[in-house]
Image 1 (cartoon, rainbow, N blue to C red):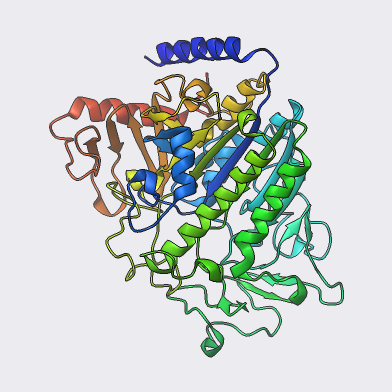
Image 2 (image 1 turned 90 degrees about the vertical axis):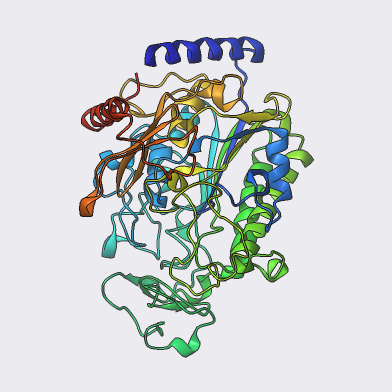
Length: 493
């Protein structure tokens, strides 16, 4: 079966490139949202929030119903997407602190490095969260922070070092802090306090948004964060302006490189905590602050598509939108996400969310548009972000080295809506692993006495009925496959 899928994908790829013409190199943009669930967009069934720009993107392209992130949390998803290797194969790829060392080693084949070699100008804008420099006290936040995005293939970067709820709360452009006063140097500490800046734990009266758990260290812009920092006052961001800032930088990258092939990895902060929408979005949804930042995210996507239209690049640009993991409500701040749901279901019909091995953890909105090339429609093909490296290499006409992207498959025809055949199976990662093959979903025995689980997703998309006892041979087959994937060092043929 696996060989047959590979043959079909190969044939479809050859047919596509015969039609597209040799040497065709479209621009590639991947917009990776944060913590957006399967039910958070109008085109996936949401009614309490309005996402006209994303709905139009879906209407003009292919909307996937089985699109996956490699993990149910942020750092491992980003690692797997950029390297083509499951993050669980490498120690130290869990959710990182803000002063972690960079976890992608310079020199290895990565998505930007491969595309750069293939003739693309590469850019990274937005949330990074893959570590920087050599970690801890070895990071010089007051100089050039290396290694960073440029060491793994990005020509340009404008990044949030970790997450919005972690220090340091500054932007780095081409690996230097933006707007830093050299007379006010930055110091960062995790596990120990640095400086005398007020904290949420000791100065809650200074907060404009209270924390519910964690997030009680240094206060920046009236919000207490994870970790401590001092200095860099002139460089600190204002959360309300973050979406505008990174959207402007992404649009500027497109404008600057409009006359040559480019790859843009645009990782939004929305809708991650702290959720602090710009005033023009406050109160615009029926779901409180979390709904308002979904509106802000939709605006962000609209700004990018508008730039492509204005520059007449839509017909030469593959634009993909997805999320890094499933939804979460209370993730450390009292922003009303739970009480203001108003009937909205962030994961749609799926069970689970961020941090979960159930479908809601990794099955996400996943939309691809290439005007004039992708036929609008809906696809049930299983596609994963981990396959971008092999698929985009094919699109760029680049032959991957045998040791590169060990878990990335070329599923380009499926991504372009040209084939109903995507992945044969997908591994889902949270605190452990689960596996989906076809319509079957298998979860092995877990901690605290949790037993094996098997679900028929064709009949039970919400994973409410464990049918393992009635289908022991199916469970055994999937358990064996999952064990093989774990024991192998690679899965790419």
